[in-house]
Image 1 (tube, one colour):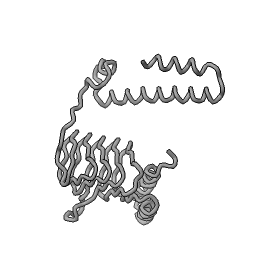
Image 2 (cartoon, helix red, strand yellow):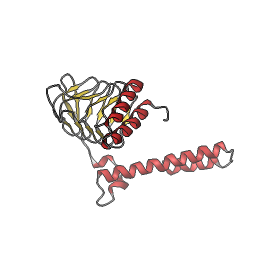
Image 3 (spheres, rainbow, N blue to C red):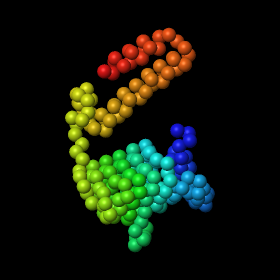
Image 4 (tube, one colour):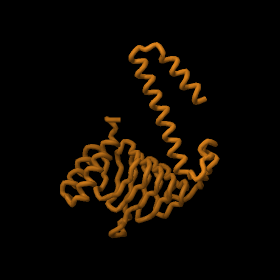
Length: 209
């Protein structure tokens, strides 16, 4: 993780963004230029990127000044969030939560990409994208609309009254973290040469069957 270039580029953007907000634009531009030459990721420090972004490699990624990226998005290499060259001011795309942009995808202009949408590789998007849509082609068109159903979640989560999909996703994530911590503890146990590690592993596996 510490050697992941996408993470390095994203962390540097966060620093540059804070500098931009503090009106230290010269230093923010210097950070942008350094990241562009070092990691081949050109992210304008004024762009707004929420948390949970997975920036794969970062190579060839371009994010414009007025672009906005929602939470929990995935951006693969070569993605461009740019302008058409015919607009001024607010001229870059607005990406909703949970959007996946595959390799080489281009989203151009001040348009909205709905939550949970998927932009396939090498697509060029110049029009609004509905929520949960999968778009592809040049120019990109809607190929399908995914369905988000509550029955895709465990019955235990659905039994909770008043727990919407976001709440259920959070609970699933917490369960995954608990299981991951159990695996870390077992690995530490094995590294220390303790004898009861196999019993702990069998217990964990049986509890999640």
